[in-house]
Image (cartoon, rainbow, N blue to C red; front, side, top):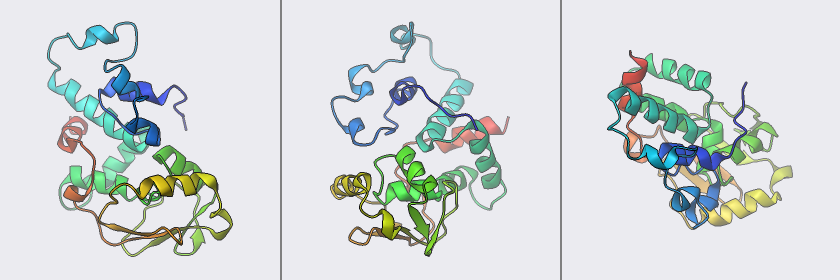
Length: 211
C-alpha cells in the first residue's frame, strides 16, 4: 500500500483547516495553518483569490479532507464507502460511523495516542488488545460492547503516558468509556452523527461517489 511521506502540515494547509494530524502541535502557535493559512506551493497565496469553486471541486475537497483526517488511502476509503452504501440508513452517516469504528481511531479517541497515525503504529506493533487478544490490524472494526486495552507489557510506554495526560484535559466522546488507570476502554454504543466530532459535509462525499 502506498504511504504518504511528505509533511503532514501541507495536507492541512491544502484543505484550509486543521486535520489534527500531529497531535498537540496542532493546538499551538506552531501549527502551519495558523502561521500560513494558504495552500502550499508556488501559487498557494494566489489560490484564495480564484473564482468560486465548482460543486465537483467542493465534493472532491470534502472527500480528500475526510480521507486525510482518518489517514486512509484512496482504495481503503472507497472500500469503506462501498460497505457503507450497502447498509441501511444514511450512507454518509454510515461512512463516518465505519471510520470511527476502526481500531486505530478508537485508540486515538481513548487518548492512548496523540494522533491517528501514532495510534496505527501502536496497533501494528501489537501493543493493543481487543477483548483480551492482541490485534495488529488498524482497520479492525470495533463493535459496541468490545473492550480495547493496552497490553500489560506495553503500559510503560512514554508515548501512551504523555498522550493520556494530554487527553485528560479534553472532552472524550460520549460513546467510548475510558479507564485511564488501567488503560482500558469500551465502546458503549454505535455513535450517532451528532456524537462524532468531525466537521464534515459527508453528503458531498456521497454525491461525489454517486456520479
